[in-house]
Length: 313
Image (tube, rainbow, N blue to C red; front, side):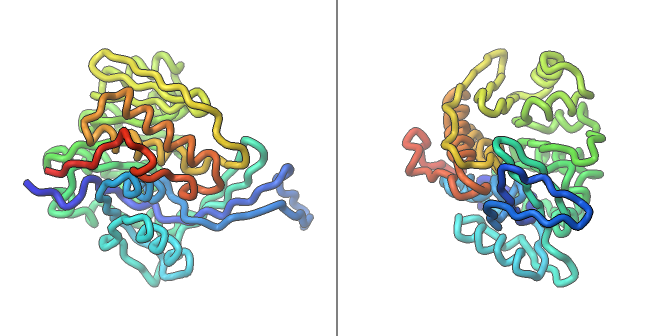
């Protein structure tokens, strides 16, 4: 069967307002402080993921909603410029587009998020014909996309029944409840892409070795993001480790993990060996970590000669 898309994902539509200073912490009591710099860019883990995947030569579509406002236009323009198919993104006059304020200080940052349009997508919006038109479903921002969360297990199951491969990046749970039937969800996941803290919390705040033992036994491919320490992956009893050079100075790390996901899946969907997938993923993550915002540093397929043109069914 001919597939229209290599990947389809659910859009956690928001913009990032990035404030930067050596002392970014606000003071209440009507105290006004200045900051050294700011950026206003498209955010959202799945949106950033989609732009990176498209830049790597994959045909990508997003399903979701944006508000009928300037932030919604910024998102649509950014996605379109990267080559993402936005025909399934609708603009809703009753909504305000989501916003995350990042307060960046040195190598650390704090975030405040107004979810807005990113929470409105529900399982009823996902039709089988649309899913069946893709080779792969990437499900990110699991806990932020609250409209989908009650049906996340069924959504993953539907995708598998329709013949798609699937990947899951839960990202952080703002409520820190981590309330998901993980055992059941993982039966429909081919590639799991947590960072170390997410892996532990998904498994009930156990030690990292315990979490890895559990997860390795339940998904065909487990990929662990370790930040500046690189990444590891396990499949069929084989472990691969990829170190990473320090990112260029001046970046904020926003979106690095999402571009990492796209790089790994670009290699994996091409049938590359897991070590090669990890290498591509780390190069994408490092490039983004060295820039401000989630999309400016993203590499293109021409920057990664080891990544062949994607063959479609």
